[in-house]
Image 1 (cartoon, one colour):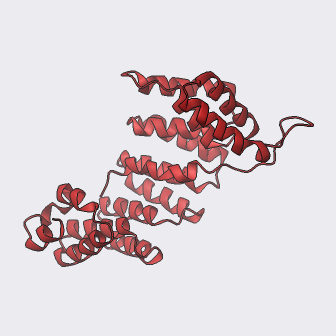
Image 2: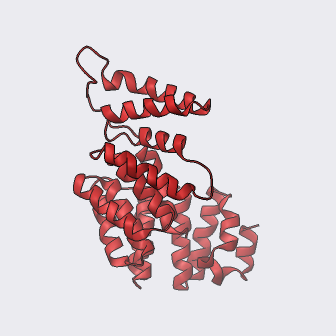
Image 3: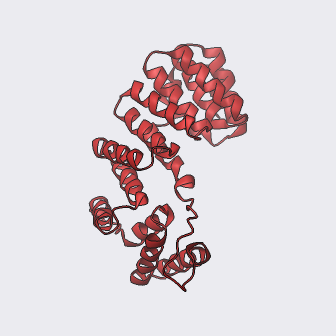
Amino acid sequence: MKKLIILLLCLLPYALTCQEKQTKDSPGKETATDSIPGWMKKAEDLAHQGNIPEASALYIRIMKLEPHNKQAVQGWLMANMKRSPTGEQEAIQSLEELGKTYPENSAILFWKLFLHAEYGHNEEALRLAEALIALQPDSGINWLAKGQILYGMERYQEAVEAFDQSMGLGQDRADVYGMKASALLKLGKSDAAISTATKGIELFPGNAYAIYNRACIYSLKGDKVAALADLKKALEINPRLKQHARQDEDLKSLREDEEFKTITQ
């Protein structure tokens, strides 16, 4: 199974969904929902052209209108972040300064959380996740992020509880079932882990990653037959997983098996 903290990347499609709040810039001017798609496109074009000041100004204009627009914050961050040995700290510091100007912007908190988690600053990432949950207690994405961070901190029972909260708030996705199953396995609850992974597969049939993760659980449990059956199915759906399977420590017990060698070629 992939390292769960990396799976914060799975939040990006959701993080890049703008909340369509009908906020107005000022009387007589365009509404946010009328203007923002065009502004986003223009800002992206300006950033690609190297015109960072104008791109940044447009991203900030969007932030003022839509404080929860994660795409604008990400665009601003990517435009201003330097690719250098100190890029990590510069990126975090940039968001810190931006947050002082726009303290109610939850998207800034989200990307700070993302960066801290990406760089392994788990304690700070957890603090930010809890701050986001305090602001938006009904957001399943925030609970999902908290669960992933707790998993990375080896606080598995708390991670399971956070994943349950996330699923209860609409994040009913195959990868969340996989994450919860992985945490249950770490707690020594292999039967519950398999049951959880199976539910995810039933809800999202044909999801190669969900089937692959269950293969890993079976392998760690010592059920070679079930592990190989799931692995074969997952690789048929997504052959690109073959290289990962050959190196995955969770599948170590299968490496000398002839069927494993055949299906991962």
